[in-house]
Image (tube, rainbow, N blue to C red; front, side, top):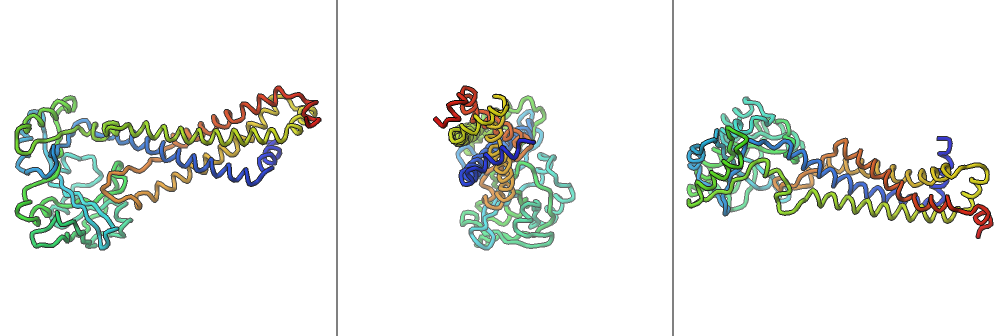
Length: 384
């Protein structure tokens, strides 16, 4: 620490260059934090996905007859089938987009790990217009228990009375579910079904299937699809593990995130290496003087490394900290129901940022340090 004033004076020798370098490093590590945080989200989703559940939807799009539940339950290995449908709309202004998942009475049994009590589920069954609102959504729309809200849906989800207005009453404010990053609103499927046009009643969007044996999940999913392959509504079934695996989207998003983060690190490396090399060239006589008064090669190299490490480590801390702050506001900026995950700023994101900052600082100072080690002191002092 006794050499810190010397290092700090070197860093601030050109204040404008120092500030611009710091800002550039900060922006690069903000991008780094968001991309690596997104990978942490993907890993968390995969860890929390259940091996004993399947999602089944219409292979070619559209709604599914609710009567298919009994047929699916007849497939060996199927324990229970629940159905969910979705209401997409807005509150008051089209910019205020909302997404309400309408669940039947079996959803709590298929998803028992959700942090919703049986009493809270019962509130929605007792009040057909009841709504369970997560804390995040309640904060976003300033809702409390007992409040009413009207969701205005597109014409495709028209009600039997000719309107597109769906009125709900907040039955309970419930804890958030980790992988539903933007929060949720759960309603009563029966309310939605009975209020629709007669031609739309008795239909649902997706079946949630709970299995008896989690080791046969993929096999049973294939059996379900085969059972309805020649029907008027063929199914496309996918295990929850596969549904939560982003590599199944046709593009390895996690790998893309890592490549983006790596590109940011190369930018930082180029920037800091160029800055340190220029700073060393400008002060060769000063380094020669330090060697003359007794500084060893190792000591001089340590000063150069510290000069590179300050903007890298400080920029990394500020950048990842800013990324963590951004994740607090992203849920309010991303429309609900779009399936856009939010980066998770785990402790390992900060650890990797610190490691990468140290590596970049070391790599940036390597060539200037080698030049100082081979420097001819007499030549440097003469200014040649």
